[in-house]
Amino acid sequence: MKRVRILNIMLAVMTLWSCTDNWSFSADSRYNLSFESDTIRLDTVFTGVASATKGFMIYNPNSVGLRFDAVMGGGDGSSFRMNMDGEGGSVLTGLEIPANDSLFCFVSANIPFSDNAGLVEAFDSIRFILESGNVQFVRLAASGQNAVRLRGLTLERDTVLTARMPYIIYDSLCVAQGAVLTLDPGVRLFFHKDAVLDMAGRIVARGSADSVIVMRGDRLDLMLPKLPYDLLDGQWGGIRLRSSSVDNRFEYCDIHSGSWGIKADSSGVEALKMSVVSSVIHNVSGNGIEAVSCSLKVANSQITNAGLSCVDIAGGKAEFTFCTIAGFSMWKAGREAVALHGSRDGRLTPIEGATFRNCIITGRYQTAFTVQVEDSIRDRVPYSVSNSLLMVQDTTDARFSNVVFDRRDARIYGSSNFTDRTERGYASVFTLDSLSRARGIADDLSAVWTVDLAGVPRPPAGADAGCYQCVP
Image 1 (tube, rainbow, N blue to C red):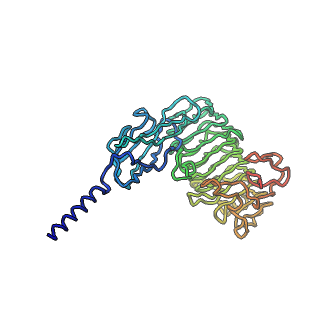
Image 2: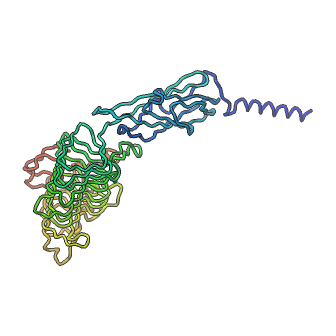
Image 3: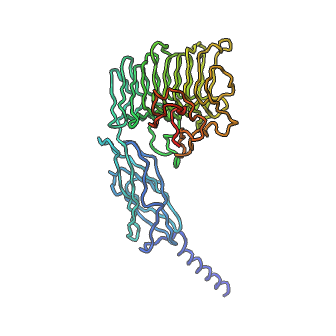
């Protein structure tokens, strides 16, 4: 008798447990789901390109399980797609969440192309229909940027690209010898992985202070919170100026996130290979500017955070004025900020002149400026650094004049010459700190370069070295 009573008690407990366990489901209208957010906004994408997938949690905070269907408001014609419990589609049925459990929902967007020059907004919602008949919603939002797509294109004649829409470049954009590519102010070129701008002809890229020309990778989404792909290096190739390409002009251009910045092949010093004015070359995995046996002029510009050297010159002539050349790559070890070479690939490349005037040349290591030539000719190499902030160990070189040496034993040196480098998350900021030792050391060339890269006026005397005038 006692054994039967115990058995009955056990059966009652098991029956009660079976009625309240996590796998019992209710159609009672008192119970609802809860969501991580009532609105899911996806990263901006180019129209016609699927966005990265974004997930959010669906919670069942109740003591009973819930069954439901999920329906995309726009149906099969929606710009959004969803996936739950391994199933994808515009209508998902028979979904279950046990008591006090949760489920991931993944959504992505693919906004159709239109002729609208601005951003295109897309909206929809997922309708959650519970067994009880209760209906709940999660709103979806995404932005798409229309763009002109260029695939494996070679320009055989003079061409002008306007700023009405950005351009996505696949398989590189080539300009044939004799042709001129002109970029209007505000043009934005987005290069797909490994795509390059390959110039056998000539480029004239003249932006303005308020309409900068941008050349960058085509990923618009985030790798991590606060870390967009745009801040990573190696997102595309870079700009290649072939031997036949001369008289190239870059003014108010922002060239960043590539495998390199600008590579200039040998073309002699009789004609100017390129001029770079009031521009930024930043955050590349190779060299920022790489030039072999040619002539170049760079002024009022920022060349920073290269994975190798910010400026790598093998022979020829080079002139840098009011430039900030700083190697503090966040993704690569980097090398000296400026490297001058007397040979390349076993071939002599005599340096015929290299001047750095009113510049900042610094970096992560003790020496940011090197001259790599045979010892027998080192004393005859025509280079000079003047009125600049320079990080080197050998401070006795007679070709350094009116130079302030950026030394590690100083209270302010290296990256501390610049304002907070974490001001925009992972983005480096190279405006001058008020205590920077580059303050007030420039010469009278400020009468020529009257405003800095940011449009700040330079004083007629005692201007700061580098491309930015300090604004305390």
